[in-house]
Image (cartoon, rainbow, N blue to C red; front, side):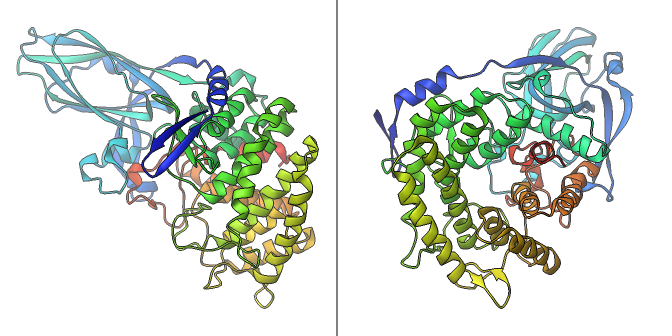
Amino acid sequence: MSTQKLVNQVIIRNEQFIETAEQLKPELYESIVKPSSIVDIKADPEVIHGWRSEVVAPASSLADNEYQKNDSFVLDFGDHQVGYLTINIRPAGSPPDAPLKLKLTIGEMPVEMAEPFENYNGWLSSSWLQEETIFVDVLPAVISLPRRYSFRYVKFDVIDTSPKYRVVFDRVECKAVTSANLNAVEKISHQDPELQRMDEISIKTLADCMQDVFEDGPKRDRRLWLGDLRLQALANYETFRNNELVKRCLYLFAGVPDDKGKVPANVFVAPKLIADDTYLFDYSLFFAASLYDYYFATSDLETLKELWPTAYHQVDLALERLDKNNILKDSSDWWSFIDWEQGLNKQAPSQGVLIYTMKQAIRLAEELNVPERDSLKGRLDEIIEATKTHLWDKEQQFFISGSDRQVSWASQIWMVLAGVLTKEENSKLMKRLLEENPSVGIATPYMYHHLIEALIVSGEKERGIEEMKTYWGGMIQDGADTFWELYDPKNKDFSPYGSHLINSYCHAWSCTPTYLIRKFSL
């Protein structure tokens, strides 16, 4: 063990766990991908964000064109890529008597090629926007860009050459990287072509997020978050079965708890393993849930024994937040994530997460035959009874949350997943939720996943498929080649960060249709 101090934070590093994680670091699969076409980006109010791409020439014709000052073009790689760009450039005309100044704009969506990054005014750092300005002193040249990008489109702006020469781009290619073995996935042939396409895009989304950890998004934030990990791991068990990568991620989290034993919501892995200073109630509990899913996917008893104390401690710490009535204390700070829905009160859905993860922890304790099993069972019964007494509104027939007695989608969904009511009561609750449609709704694919799963476990599989087609099918209709961080069919420009330019259009928590389709035989 060693101690690391950050601002207002003491991390107790478990070097043995960290070394275990390091030994599980995967090799990356590499492939060379070339652009498919040269495209124009056209304004179109009928498509998402108001911009679409239109093919003007095959990419193979690129080497036939000469470019000079103020010329530009956009390459389309035909599908989402994560990797490293290499550009071969040669001069045409007189010998180059000045450097080439070249600007590259790299993006996942047509809007990123159309709307100037200079106009970005969101609250996340603009440095996440992918762009480069390059000066090339000697031509011809092979430019291998050192940064890894997440993209489909690349815009080339020739800022300047000189009046005497032009440039030709002989070859542009991407070395795509992933730790996912695409050949390991069992192909399905679904009788429903929409679900078939959804499965394929989910797998592509997951693969592009699988690097040396399960990243939440390869464009942004490019790190390991516990909430994303839980859903990625579920999808992985049904597809790539890269279970060593899940194990690595669990050990990374267990390697850097704080001085109270709490695991962080996310970690950075470069230049070394660093715990972020963000702690979330639900994400910490999902360490236990992720260990539960891992164990029952792998039967890896040794890992369960090693990580059980960390998992149990997350539950133990969570129980400290209960008041005298066994209801979680609410607060106005960012204490639990649940969803990005504006105005969402987190008390009741977090109570559901607590019950959900306690049941999983009890099951793990039974596997290990440890004494925590009985104490957890006793507390669970008390908490479920308190939840029914204090958070169930008999008049509205909904669970309520916070001092304002808010009725939200998230509260009902998590109480269904937690199994607070009977299956018959859950079915009635989900039907009522869909019929009455409370105004505090769902903002992310992350929460939509839980909606679909709640419908399935309450016996409403067909309605779950219908909702999947509306939501993820809507993304496909709007041009998704990987699934997005955020999607609101009623407000397609929605971003919790102040600008859709900074949104991630390949995001881990959106990859779960493949899990739902395969796990529940949809």
